[in-house]
Length: 163
Image 1: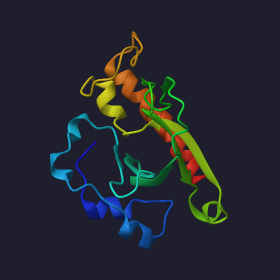
Image 2 (image 1 turned 180 degrees about the vertical axis):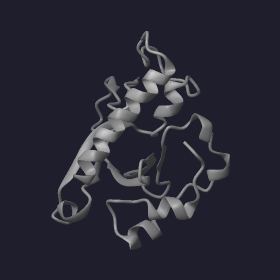
Image 3 (image 1 turned 90 degrees about the vertical axis):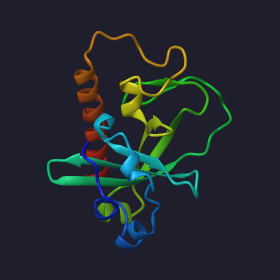
């Protein structure tokens, strides 16, 4: 992913109002992010453990989605991220829901997916961030194929948000 600015991030959101996009917490360390290793930018709101955000490049430019993480249930089981297929024990995977874009979102409709709680899928794929035993399946796919699969899974989720 190319490096992006705060202004680009704020104008990319498809499922919140301009006012909400203006008020959301954008990471302060944008200049230090490992852009060459990121397929999308994802972060949690430091002021609220329930809020998360995801921005990615698409054919039309950037697409940003505001997410809400479900509260942990207290059950500590192994779960798999539906984007990058990394398994985590404990709270490493969260159900993230996104209000749908447009009229459907205004009517209260949303979609959800199980995603790495820290939204660091790109770093897990590349081995840049450690994951516990059994976290990554031993696959014969190349890194490029794993990235393509992850981005296809992300595109499917974003298509459901914007439908």
